[in-house]
Image 1 (cartoon, rainbow, N blue to C red):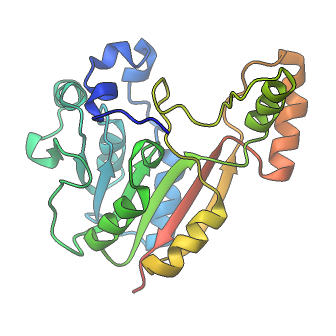
Image 2: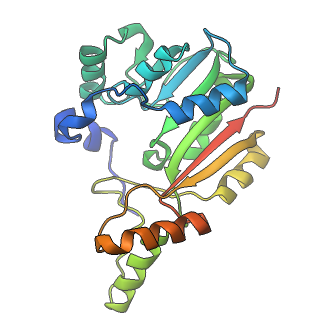
Amino acid sequence: MPIPASIHDHYGIPPETYWRDHYFAVEPDYFGIQIDTAKRLLDFTPGMKALDIGAGLGKTMVALDRAGFATWGIEPSVPFRNKALEMNGISAERLQNAKVEEAIFEERFFDFITFGAVLEHLYDPAESIESAMRWLRPGGIIQIEVPSSGHFMAKLFNLYFMMRGTNYVTNLSPMHAPFHLYEFSLESFRRHATTAGYSIAHSYFDVASIHQIPRFLHPLARAWMKRNDSGMQLTVYLRKPG
């Protein structure tokens, strides 16, 4: 599979060319479900330390700060990091311009780490999880949102391509937006857990957005994906042994 020579080939661009205007605002409930779930799993106390890997515009960092966490971030794109500092008042000392493989933090420093729509873009997702586990305190939680390999709509479109006599697939897009190198299943995390030493504390699937089919079919497709856990996004919460 082709991959870009550098992650900056895709993300070393002005954020305005990647996100639509409405995305730049941090809504009051942004990342709220994820934060509430993390607090429940952590038995939260104010001042717990959080790390946002792939911080982008810094919206999740802002939401975590508002929720009572002391928050740090990693962002490999210089333009994205600069926009986060400019827009959201994030301290430059709290937001490293680095890839996961290059970032430096103390071991057992964080209580909560989040990979929001990040792992599917990384060349070695297993290594990235293992790095994050070293930075996590015993009993801490890593939250991960990734595209599901069981997505019903992707399978439907792949069937269409096959019936057209092509070898196209819609699952991965290493050289064009949204630049996905991997998809994931719950089983992939279960298998990795046996070698990386974590447990799956919580997981669920989201249908998310539906595209490319007539709108009158959306309720039927949504109901099917909810019933069969075949939505577009998989979210897992991983716990480091305490």
